[in-house]
Each structure stands twice: as structure tokens, then as C-alpha cells.
Image (cartoon, rainbow, N blue to C red; front, side, top):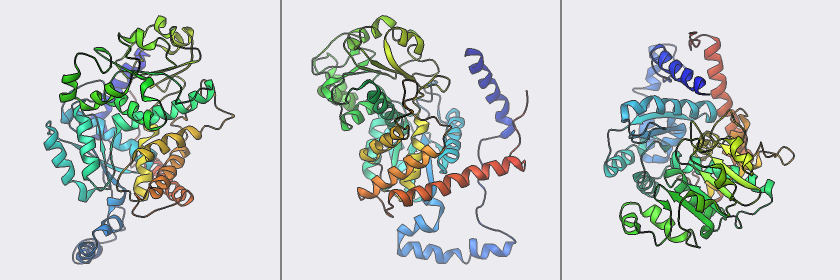
Length: 442
């Protein structure tokens, strides 16, 4: 596995100058001669602009805004690399943009900002609103990522999403829904230990509560131990991280103290989103969990505990963030389809209910007769899962009154099929005709 990781890294560096970027902008309108620009540009385009002045919502009908989002970062928490800055974050944002297009048919523009202060970042992103149908925040350090997301969601009239928070949380919820079906336990009854209290697990805790989990039975563990209302850093948290402070007040009803070992004793579920292992979670701690334990070890590239070690210690269901193990819990299963659904109804926001519906749709895509301990969540290879989730999100947005152009499930499904299939077909044709150069050997 280490050899494979090393090879992929070397290949990425080798081909980066060969392709000089991962995407380009290509016209989608016919151009046979320069005369056509009388329609596409001046003087004809002035009439389009005048129409939008009269009715600004027409910008979603007359321009590419309806299907275009910005992928925005400040480069302060990129993958496992940490604070590498906006320039070094650009290759990652380009990769994200390609995933958006290939899996969701969404046109995504990477924007890496030299704006470390939350106020400046927020101001810049808000000013981008007229050009985009949505904003995907990416790789922003905690806790400022919470403030940025909450502020932008409240102040913008287009969907704003932070994938490290909401995408991971939604994928985790989907996997947990099906895992609980297998072990015969209910969301409101289980005790869930969340190892790591950064962007993803804070968001996961919040969405689990909205999905029916008992907040008093959630146990969060950070670098200082178990979170609880009497911990000696509560005043500091209240000032510097009110989101974690809020969770400290409402979780851990029994006021359990200690570290990971104590947090896992009597737990039904472990959701670990901390630091790469192995050895972060020990086998003897898994043995302290209840029977039919569920373990999500989501750190990359190496999970907090190897799946075979967790199973040997008594876990019945194990999931990781890796594609080479069963049960990959990956936010790439969520974000392309959430934006597809939101864009297709020209949504004004992405609500928690839309997130939960996305998780439910992802979970229900696995039919009951195929559900097993090694198959609790669909794989990224099945492109039609994105259509089902997108249509479900679009329908939920319409039901909640968050859609500028409401659609029912069937209408949204047909639209998503057309757009996603077209994106994949264009890529295939470009490769066949060698407009995209073949991957170089070496």
C-alpha cells in the first residue's frame, strides 16, 4: 500500500507539467464565423443584459450561472498537508473541480484566495455571488471554517457548502443508517463516540442529532480528552470555538471523563476522523465497546485502526475512507449530487433537511437484499447513485420552498440523467478523438 501511494504521488508530479492543469473552458455555443459574435457578444448581447436588469433571476436562465459553482479555499488545511497556502492548494481544487464535472455534471471553478482573515474571506466570497449558482468551501482550517460557513449560508441567496464539514458528515450518516439496520439498533438508542472534534466530526455530531441521535449519548474526544461541560477549558472554548463549546454543553450526559479508552467503553459506534494511524485506536479499546460494534475509521491515507484489527477485536462492521477496503465512506459520494440537485432547482440554500435527505437517498440506494457487513454504502463506480441522490435533494428543496424552479423527483431525475450523462459522454469523446492527450507511460 505504501508503494502504491508513492507511485501515485510520483505520477502526479510527472504528469502535472504534461497536462499543465486539469481543466479548460470550451465554448458551448456554435461559432462558424466571426459574424456569430453579433449574437454571442455585441451588439446582440446587450438585449440579454437589459432583460436581466429588468429581472435579475434571468441570470440563472440566460447565462452559465445555473450550472457553475466556485470551489473556494484559503489553503489553510489542505488534505493531510496542513497550511500550505493558496498557490499549493490550486492542484487540489482543480482535482475537485474535475470530480464535480465527471460525477455531477457541475461546472466548478477553482478559486484560491490570499485571505487568511475570516472577515476578508467572507467579504470576497459574498462579492462573487452574481457569477455563481453555488459556493463549495474547501480545506479551510478549524474553527474559522465554522464561522465562514454559517455566515455565508445566512447572508447569500445561493447554496453554500463546506465539504470537509457537510460532505463528510452526510456520507458518514448514510453509512451509519445502513450499519444500524444490519445490527438491529436505532439511531436514538445508540451511544456514539466521535474521535476528533475538527470540522468533519463537529458537523457530524450536529447532523446526527438532527437525524435522530440522542445528543446526550454522543461522546466527543479531542486532543485534550473527552469533551464535557465541566472541562477546565470551557471558557476558552466559549471564546475561540463556540461550536465545540455548544457541543460540550449538550453531549456526554453522563459527564464521562478521560481519553479514547474511556470514551469507547460501552459505546455502540465509533466515528474516528482524527489523525492517520495505525495505532491511534487500539484493539483493546474496541473490545470495550458493546456487542455488534460499528467502527468508522476515516483518517487517510491510513485509518486510525486497520479494519482487520478492529474486526478481530470484536467490531461487526468496519468502514474507512479508502477505496481499497470495503465500505468506503467518502464525501465524493455526496457533494457532486447535492450540488446537482440544488442547481437543477436553482436552490437558494442547502438546508440540513436537504443534507439528511441526501444521506437517506445514498443509504437507500443499497437494496435490502444486497446490504451486508461489507456493503453498507454504494461505491463511486455506480454513476446512477448520483442521479438518485440529486433528484432526492432537488425534491426536498422544492418541498421546503427553497427552489426557484421546483421539480418533483421524476422531473429532477430526468434532468440529472441528461446533464451527468452528457458530461461523461463529452469526456469520452474528447479522449477518443485525442483532444485530451493519453496518459503518458513511464
